[in-house]
Image 1 (cartoon, rainbow, N blue to C red):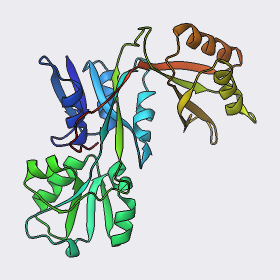
Image 2 (image 1 turned 180 degrees about the vertical axis):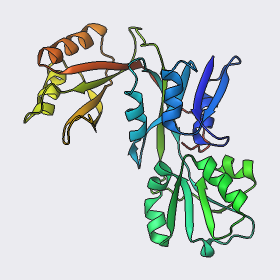
Image 3 (image 1 turned 60 degrees about the vertical axis):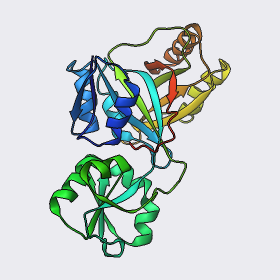
Image 4 (image 1 turned 120 degrees about the vertical axis):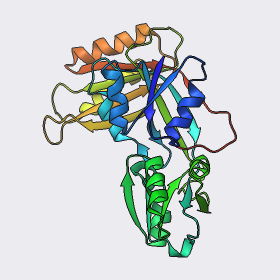
Length: 282
């Protein structure tokens, strides 16, 4: 089985991939960006991929859901939640007081926004925490630091000059596992819907939510994203988490389509949470 994740070596996605796909016959493939990872599944170059969907502090990773719906053949088949602990990594002889800039991937910089603002330092975005740390290592600069994990610091022989700098100590990232097949098993806890309203009108989201309420479907996650058709027009991502039967889901889809909305099921899956006491990253 071929599995894609965000590289290079040392990213938080790599650690999540290794822990989730705990199988002998797995070939891992690294890609430079999250959209590239998802595209690899959409174009059938790999069988599955694992990508971050949301974080306790940063919220939804928009590049993930935007890339996910760009292919009609992509589905969520599982999820994996990891605790996230972030640290300031620096080259030898660097001192915390001399750091003027930090580098990392955008979601991680967002998770450390308060820390960055408090220290009045600049930030620079990279495609991954690992690529930022490698660039730091190669630069040999002592006025710049990268934000990443303990394992990343160990891989590159970087010093940790400040610990647990994320804005929330109880920080977690939820990853989703993507494949080309929609899971049709009956006993699955979660269902992910993407609903594109038939027309823009007052109360359209409220009318959509009323359908789920009437069918006693509990929604645990709602996100809106532009349709790219017209400014101010959105589609909605909704996650149901009360172990809905296929009959109930089909009834919801039928009602929503009767109301003129476009409905797509992009996932039926169960959740899995890391039981490790170690701290991990995106």
